[in-house]
Amino acid sequence: MPGTGSNGSVTRSTLRQQIADALRDEVLAGRLQAGREFTVKEIAEQYGVSATPVREALVDLSAQGLLEADQHRGFRVHEYSVEDYRGIIEARGLVTTGMFQVLASDTARHRDPEDPRVHAAVVGVRRRAEEAQRAATAGDLTVLIGYDLRFWRELGALFGNPYLADFLHRLRVQSWVCAVQHLRRLDDLRGHLWSRHTDLVDALMRRDLPTARAIIAAHDADSLALIERLASG
Image: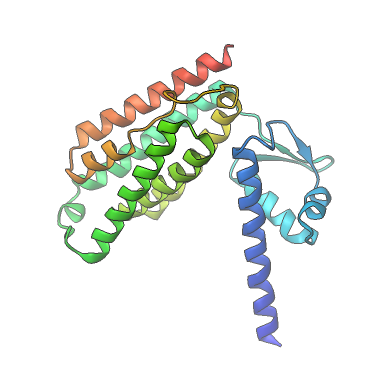
């Protein structure tokens, strides 16, 4: 029956996404460390599911740059170098600059801030910024990563360009994967994590692009300096 096939496809697609999300969280939490190798069968048995959605999830994560595929040995968590991190930070900065530039466009300038949908989106982004900032101040890396990714995803959506938003999300995931392997070495992360999410939101809502760019430039420079210092021992 057509309905059965359709439901089966939806279920498999949902399972595929759930597995991909779970594995991404394992990598970001440092439980699946850089260089770790595993097979489709191993992951399927771990989650108690069939091989097909697992293979699809692993291929998705490979396409996102989190895993490397080896036809003979399965998959391996990608190992990012400091040079990789430097390139990611540079790309991330270029994307955020492009997003911020949207604010200067005629379309953005004439968006009604009193529009209930716009207002709700801004309130949501501000709330996410506050949550991320609290986690950063407390040095809670796991909580920060979750809120930081949601903050940038929702902020990107507010600019109305899904292509930029999706690309930025991918870059931020990759930058966190690279940074985590170094940040987890510190016993106390308080004072080391970026916590100016609300300052950035305030600057953007005022359309103060010079301040917004300065905040991001400082963020990128500090992040790179920290990872370079940790990587050097």
